[in-house]
Length: 397
Ligand SMILES: *Cc1c(COP(=O)(O)O)cnc(C)c1O
Image (cartoon, rainbow, N blue to C red; front, side):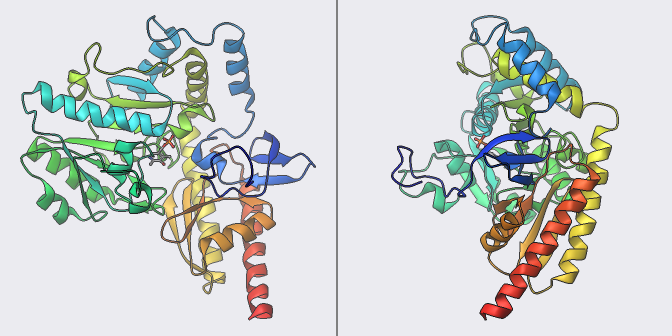
């Protein structure tokens, strides 16, 4: 809405929702939209999940905020559970993805600092990456469109083409501290780093004394059918950032690290006012209650395959509109031959919500609790939208 008091930084769809139920968003006039954007992979358990509502409301009646001046039992518990479920030994809670990455970057630099290698501050990153919108994370992402007009980029990032292992090797120098990568680029267009490439990055890190930092902000918390997406590769990072899905819609991020990688993060070197507050911890623990339930992740993988197979059939039926299907689990993308924004709009007209991404991709990121019926429903809506686009193109020329 132009003329509003808000910064004009978003190209918003002309839609407002009044409530949500599972995979559905409902406008004030009662129109129901099937939500395959899930707040950009945030509403991992859909909208108004009873277990999350109970956790949040229960906590809201007891205690909201005390600051990190005190022990926060929910934080201890969520930290221990995340450590038990992942490669990590240590966890730092923040409020967003970008903050989790800021902590990851600081952790890597401090590691070398306390090892006596103050010069090792540089981090190798990849083209097409997205790590957030703070000054350091736009420098890490390296995208001109996000850096322009914001002055000198934060120093210390060396960017190479996505998945180009030779370029990584060449970029490693005496000042390199770490390699930072998304196991599958989300904003970049659902571009997966091959498991073999991930293993090679691990080898390079080990050979050169670098830390491997993964940005699992979008891929984490079950999105790809594993708790963290790097698990598909069989190797572990030293540091990982998570956010989006862990809060199920409550702002929550975390930096995970091994004991060794976190050794420089001693009292006083980092902090946050809001990070890890009791409300966020109650919700994060409730999300884990469900995502870590026996069989939940296997179901995500199975449903991901169902959706992907349906999309592949659609790609075959609409070769003039769809180039290919990409992704893993419930993090899927359709690379389009017509502008992805037009496809997104056509899907919205069929009351299906999705999210755009780079490389002309439309992202499908349903809540992880999506049912088979809803997947089939979405596939029908996609077919209808593409058929309407085709008819429209033929009629309009
Ligand atoms: C969304 C996202 C971020 C940034 O998270 P914010 O909460 O918006 O700061 C960072 N990295 C990846 C991979 C993301 O998808």
